[in-house]
Image (cartoon, rainbow, N blue to C red; front, side, top):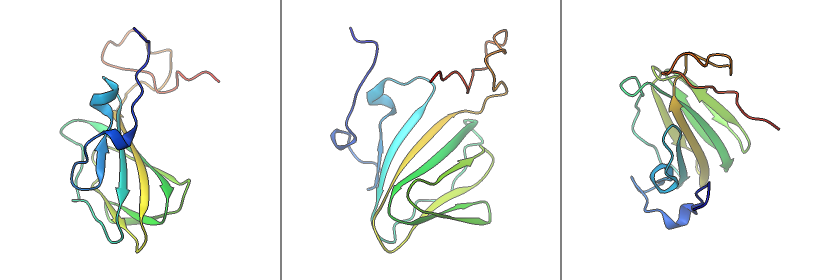
Length: 130
């Protein structure tokens, strides 16, 4: 059995017309990953992640869009990423052209270093080596 999972977003059924959640197909236990292809003028419902304590990162791959975080409109161009804490309300408001996002979510960590190994409820956000 392989030590990884691979999935193509095109093979995953869309939710809400635009979003394809890759998390279950990948078997991820801590990180949520979704691909969103937004039609011109598309908007999702404003929401937060207080109840599941998830922070998110939205990365715009193509097009132009605005992500509204609480009352701030964040203009996005390809390559831009925005981090959003669990308590903040967020909404994608797509521009007049198609756009594509990758959305990443994970439990908000109280431990952001690899030195917090004694807390079983924490995880490290900087364990990448490269």
